[in-house]
Length: 169
Image 1 (cartoon, rainbow, N blue to C red):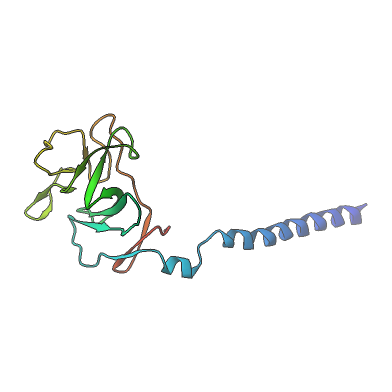
Image 2: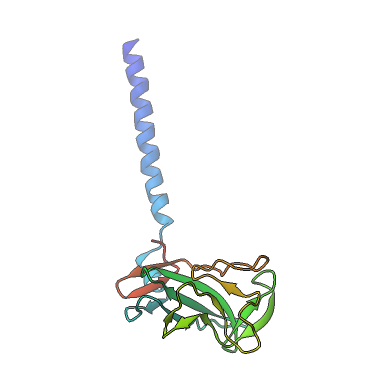
């Protein structure tokens, strides 16, 4: 009887080890290959200082383009948002980002002496839009107006002086 219990325990142990061995290649296949990571967009941000921003065109083809708004806050943390564009102007959302209610040629954070204004917001600086318009967001992309969606965040990773769009950390 003792041999039967030992044999049952041994079979269960080998079954568990076999299950673990089978799942390892499956989990590895879910990770991007080094070639796929190398083909992701790399944006040089080594020259960005704290309290600065960059609006980078994605060069996406189609009826609606897009740009990445990259903000480096006072703690040197990056915040990246994907914005829809048309002919170089950022398209402003209606109730959602797939419906547009206006366009903006000067969409950026508020600046003070060339740096992000403390307590400032991201908004349209075109003359027809006032500072209390419905389109205002924090530097982290949170909408300051009820009913206006947050800025769409973009997944990214940082390697050295490069921000890699789409990479998981």
